[in-house]
Structure formats: structure tokens, C-alpha cells
Image 1 (cartoon, helix red, strand yellow):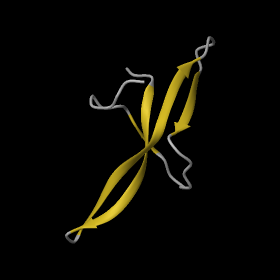
Image 2: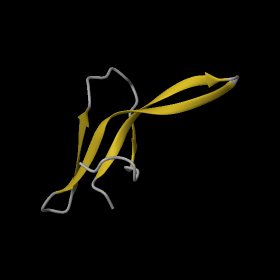
Image 3: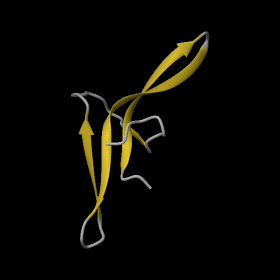
Image 4: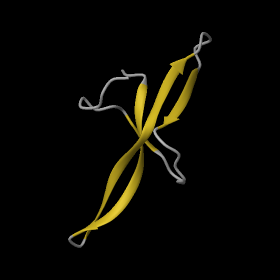
Length: 66
């Protein structure tokens, strides 16, 4: 399993009368394990954003590995 997730913002739009949602990438979230076994997450944004919701996805095969 990868130690990072793609951070996205949901963007709702109307496509020929059908409500749809696309997910705009805004950064990446890393999962790290401490020596005591606990997990820590770090979110690195691509640019400053002012949103009230971030949605995380595991990276897809087409995303570059960082």
C-alpha cells in the first residue's frame, strides 16, 4: 500500500442537465508511522486554497510517484 493519497476538492457542475462532480487535485497527503506504531498524516498543498472540504484518494497508476 502506498504511503500517500491525492488531496482533492470536489467541484460540482451541470453537464447537459445532469449534476456531476469532478475532483480537482490540490495536493498530497502522506501517512507516516512513528516508532511507537502510531500513524501521522501530513498534508502538502500545491497552492493556497480556501475551501471547507478536502477529499483524499489513494494515488492512481497514472499519478507520478513522489
